[in-house]
Length: 92
Image 1 (spheres, one colour):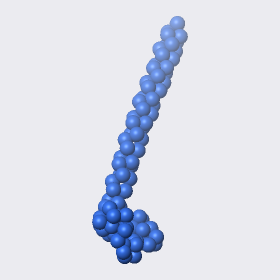
Image 2 (cartoon, helix red, strand yellow):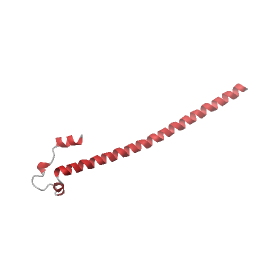
Image 3 (cartoon, rainbow, N blue to C red):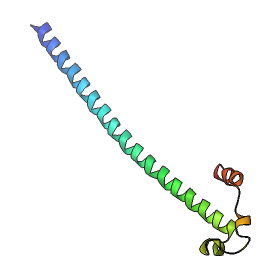
Image 4 (cartoon, rainbow, N blue to C red):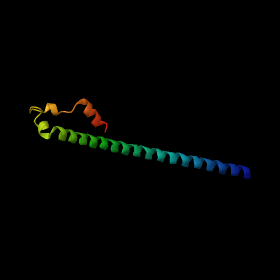
């Protein structure tokens, strides 16, 4: 009789450990989803900041007046950076 009660108690302990393990893994999965969401938001804001910095740099290089005037003044097109220069600036 004692052997049967010990086995029953062991079975209950194993089930309890498995339930706790599943609960712990579920919490870790939820934490992972939250952290991935935060990382995505941080990456998007980083891209926005980089794009704003690149736009300011380009505006300073060309000149704000030329951008506002639609490059109407003579010689403004000559000051535009080439594709090679823009690619080099983008990978900085």
